[in-house]
Length: 282
Ligand code: MN
Image 1 (cartoon, rainbow, N blue to C red):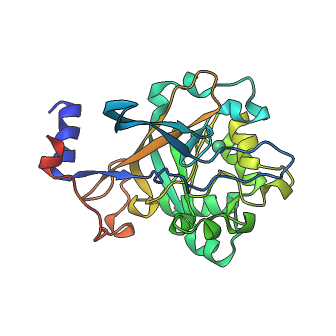
Image 2: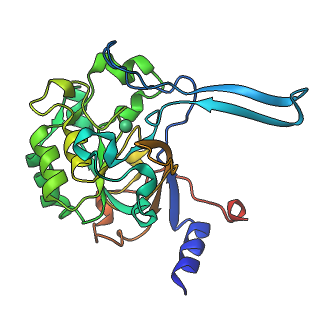
């Protein structure tokens, strides 16, 4: 069967599931809060243009307002000064928007310490169990922070949330083949990242190396450690530094995971996962 026909058939049968990693976008979606002397990103806001009324009897629509970095979003290389001469969001090749992913689960560590920082040793230990980081793939860093998404105060946690330590960020960005890092938190860096030896190390090293970030992900617990394919869809804002983005994962159910050969026992089927019905496909 042609590859795309096989994919469509597999989605219809539920053999390939589509999982939404995107946080719902609304007025209460958390945005990062910076020291008062700095500029601030806008939270999501909307205003009715018309709602089947005098302003537009047959049409309902909104104007919206937000920053490029509001809610689940994509960081382009030019977002950080270390990547200032690199790609803007509109210049990223479409083939780079559909990529495999590995999921590193450090939820237990982050539950013990809100300021937990991932180190190179943590990643190397993960690789001993799950294999090398694949070239061109996303590293999705699970911390359990998405569980706090309905409680803005717990999600922002007084600027204490987990991240990556500077040495690890540098190694991942400069020495490995991953395309970028995805996180559950409001940004790719830790809540206390301004105080690290290299402040905001994920932004500094990933953007500096021409790599990417994706943020405020959820449902990472529905993904296997290896084998998911991630579809990102940042808007092609010309000269833009990032964009709110729908982020979807394709996950193959069944015997093992095609990209890795990871045994199924490492990721038992979740009882709450839903398959696409054939009705949903028409
Ligand atoms: Mn950002």
